Length: 384
Image (tube, rainbow, N blue to C red; front, side, top):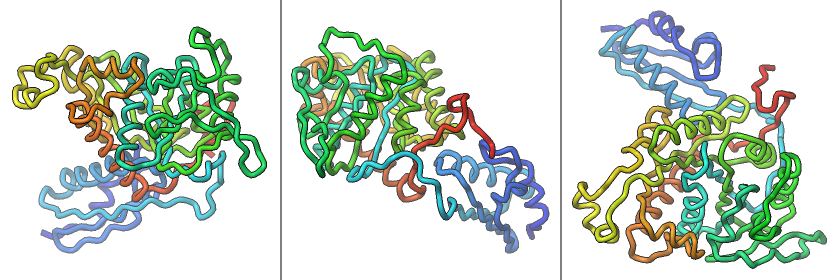
């Protein structure tokens, strides 16, 4: 069997890359096609740093050749990401911060802040230097979760400028609007005022050297999210969802926002929180692993895992419903610090996956730039 280059190119004209109107051949994404008998080598060039788009494009090429040309074809795809030689620098970098990870959810009440806090202490236990920017302006939780409600950031001089020194707890540096308001005080601000306060916590702070800054984002897709992606070059985002359909629908919107052409921030993966309930007598033992019948899927089973598969983004792990997680958050000592517990193991595994996906992202994709919103329509995409 001998494959014909013309047939392969004709087949590839039937598919497009997500977000582009032209087919792969017309857009130049297919840089070259070479055939050797029943073997074909396709050179694929992408202009977007989104990992899920690369994977989907490669899958589409394989599927199309096998279906339209030959089911016996041996296919090799060489993929690379090309960016302009002189990319426009948008927004400001924060010197000393290596990775900025947003933790987001489409809806409230899914445990996003709890997951952020436990990711942070797990990273710190692994030896990384970690900071948390509590960007949930209207519902700041980090001061409570780290037992620093009564603390206030102090002012320090850095290179002749006055900077806020983040509050430190359990080897995690934290800044939150909750440090500047009374616990019972509601933050009644319009979007621009909230964004200004956020920028002060980002750029007027002495964060020092950080391996990871975790940004605890508010629910939804609004002003704060746009302010963050405009202000910071986000390395990637982690989406937190519970398994039920209502939460998954909103989580899908969150993923869609970050992967949109206007925002274009890599999604490192999805975490399923409140995945299942295990009775107290077995939650802290090996019984939970040995006897699946002890798991009760109160909010549905593997919904976030299935969503991750549907969206071609990594599934980072699942967190069970365990009373000690809630208690630990309320008492100001994140549950992942409970040495020898199932919860410690759960968050260690999830955190390792987050680190691995960050390494993969930094290895395979160019650095993310802060987004520049160019239209009065907010985050609407503009074709130039």
